[in-house]
Image (cartoon, rainbow, N blue to C red; front, top):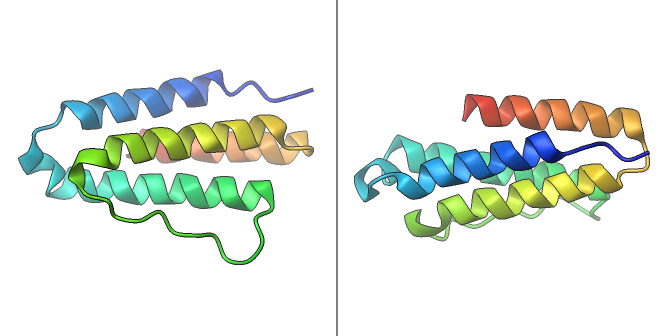
Length: 105
């Protein structure tokens, strides 16, 4: 049985949409920094869950205009990794942790 990640997908899109709506001045300050940190953490979690070899690769800082897309891509990657995880208990724990991360973002 796979874990339903619909709530995660919605939370990812909500955060990405909020970031897309922010003015450049906010993205260049705290909102952009937090957004990139969130995208990087989602990406690290997805890589670990997928069993990537070596240390997780860090998502690059590609500028304020793509932070929302980085959150969306990393979040949806994590969602797919959770859904495909063979250990349902680990997948549920990762889902809960990701949702908490997005609530704090």
